[in-house]
Length: 268
Image (cartoon, rainbow, N blue to C red; front, side, top):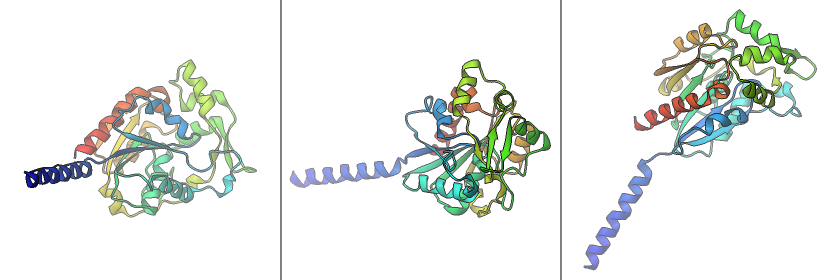
């Protein structure tokens, strides 16, 4: 009888150990774009499934007291690597805008089998040897500089005209969303987009990639988004009828898309 109890207990413990190892944690890591920080993802996070562990990363340079002249793509990527180092389970990046360049650079600095997917949300995705904004067109640049200008004294891209900034970054925003935009937007370190990206192409090829288009985007136009997506081996695409900031203007729909991506990746 005792032997039977011991055997059953042993089998139960073995089953519990196997079960805990076979159910991986799914980590959704938000990587913000230029002029924003981790707070920009809060509306999306509130709609996400409770089954997903969420980490919104603050990249260097978000504080005006930081020396922006020393902030580039590599140390932004190193910061991202430090933030994900302690995560257990699968990592799914959700990168917005400039954040795609930071993710690609991080793959070169801290490649990991734990990185399972990247969701590019109206994002750049520079190839090896390219700078962050190599795929953008002249109209994208023109729209960006309507509300922003470079301050050579503090090495930041400063928001100088809020009316134009609102009109180019989030023309689809409601009145309350526009007020929120003004609370969230910050001056951006100017040199992150200058550095060429380095990573192992085979490592990026291994990772499942998804693209979320923002059809009304003026900062990274739909034309540029299509060009970027076509340069990658994209597994699935999604489309939102928003400007450059879907995490602000269509947070619920974006959350549904990201939940679906993580769920599908977890089951593969």
